[in-house]
Structure formats: structure tokens, C-alpha cells
Length: 320
Image (cartoon, rainbow, N blue to C red):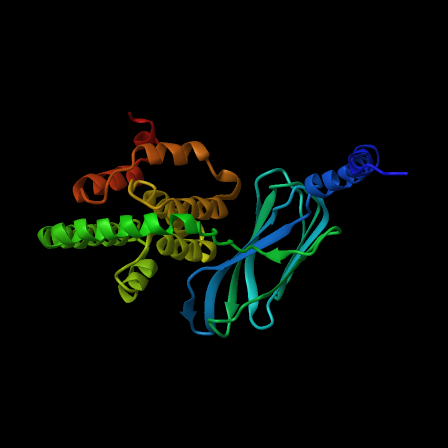
């Protein structure tokens, strides 16, 4: 009997393939859409301040549920092999109720449930014998172990390489045609901008009578960033007495009167204010200060703004 291939394909092979696809489709769907469990942390360290017994610095560890699945029994543990934890603070923004156990060498935090995108931050002022001393940190949940947060580089699109080369060559030609004319004026503007920025950064602690910070700034590289200044103020604020602590908080808020600032620096300044103020933190006050922000280029105007806020903050913020 002659077997026709078309009939075999139509009546036997095709139905078998379709049946196979329907059998594995649910499993493929589960694999693709199944929520992933991912727990990450980011460790950052502020500037080291050399003191008599070693180095004092601020450590910040941000823990986040980076996956799409709720995590239970999240436990974070920071241990100093050498040195001691002088003070610490746990910051969270979504109503979490962490259990905290701390002593001179370690800070442990436990949270029953951490939902996707929820996070908390462990901040600690530590005294260590060596500047490069790094704490040992462990993180885990019932579902998964914590991993360091890594920014993955974007993949290059090779199809755009030729276009990119053409555009690069064109830009080089245009820049070469104009750079000699603008070099002198650009350099003078850049030097003026850097100088204005440093002048304002020095004026704020001087105006608020924070001599320790002012003296420290004299010893630091003149190219001080807003972010580094914010961490210096946080470092002193955590250790200062009541009145000096309030002046340190006000100095941080004075930085918000500078309009031209990188988004990262602005975020760090606001976070440091939250750490120092705790429950007294007011987002409304932050927004009012940003509305009155001005350029550091106009030294007289920004100094008047700083003076007005320091002398009468309420009237300054409410006056249109």
C-alpha cells in the first residue's frame, strides 16, 4: 500500500506537533511570568574624618526587594571586625516595623515581610582604626540570599556604529572650528562658577557659627562638592549637641537654596536632613526652600536668601 506523505503530515505529524505545543505551553507560561525573588543591597561610605583614636565615618546600607515576589523573614546584619558602632538609625518609608538589635560591634535588623520595591536603610556612625576598614554585611530571607546591587551596562547596538562614527567626526570638525574662539571665555566662566560655589559652601557654616566645620573646610581640597558637603554636615550633626545639631540641620537646608545642583546631590542632602530630623522632617519645608532657590553666580542674592532664612525661617518661607 502506497503511503502519501501529505496525508501522513496532515493526519499524524501535524496533530502530534499541535498536541505537544499545547502540553508544554502552560509550563512555558509559568517560567516566563513566574514572579522572581530578588533581594539586593547597596553599601556606601561617607568621607573619613581622622580623629585621635582612628577614623570616624558614616556607613549607609540600602536594602531593597528588587524582585516581583514578597520576601519573608528578611534579616540584615552588619558587623565591624574592628572598631565600634557609635550610633545608628534605621530609615524606612512604607510603614515597616523592623526589629533592631545593636551593640558596639554590630547592627542587626529583621523584618517579617518586604514587598516588591519596598526598602529600608541602615545608617551608622562608626569609629574604625583604619580608613579602609569595611564592615562585614550579610542579608537573607526565607526565599533568597541577598546580593550586592550591580548596575548592568547597556548593550551596544553595532548597527549604529557607522552612524556614530559619522556623527563623531562631524562634531569634532564643528568643535575644532569654534574651540579657539570660545576657549578663553569658557575657561573664565568655569573658574568663576567653581569659585562662586566654594564661596557659598564656606559662607553657610561660617554664618551659622560652626567653627569646627569651617576649620575642616580650610584643610580640604578647594573643589568641594555639594554631596561631600552634605556628608560632612551629617557627620557633625550626628555627634553634635542640641543647639549645634540644629544649626547643622539648618546648614543642610541652606544648601537647598542653590538652584543649579545635580539630582544625586539634591537627593543626598534631603536624605541627610531626614536622618538628622527624624519625625520632625517636613517635606513641605523642603519644597518651599527649593521654590526660593537661586543661582550661586549671583553672590549677593543667594547670600541675602541664606541670611533671611537663618534669621527668620518661617517668615522667609511663607513670604511670597
